[in-house]
Amino acid sequence: MMTDSGSELLMNYGQETLQLNKELEQMVETMENISVQLSWMAYDMVVLRTDPGHAQALRQLKEAHDLCEAVVHTQPTTTTTTTI
Image 1: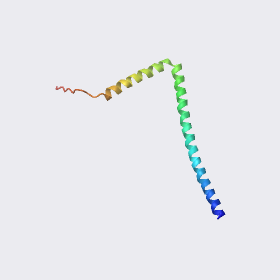
Image 2: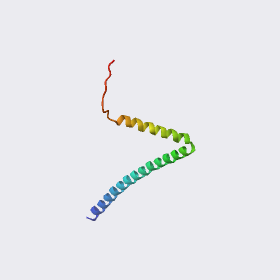
Image 3: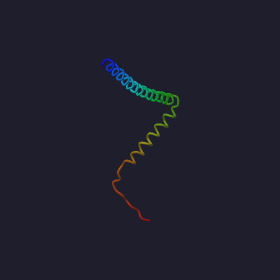
Image 4: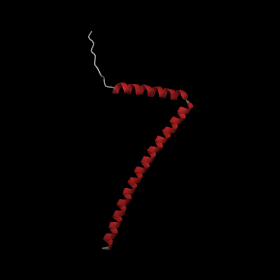
């Protein structure tokens, strides 16, 4: 009976270890993704501070995007047809 209990403990320990490894791998992957995002944010900040023209171009692009999005999402109130 003692050996059964010991083997169960070993089996449970092995399963817990595998689960812990999976969870740790997920945490590491999440932290790597956050690290990449932070690196890109830092890069963007450096680019924007060293090239003011780039910042202006991004603002113009955002304004154009917002304008296009507003046009696409508006519902036409009346429809007119023209005949040629």
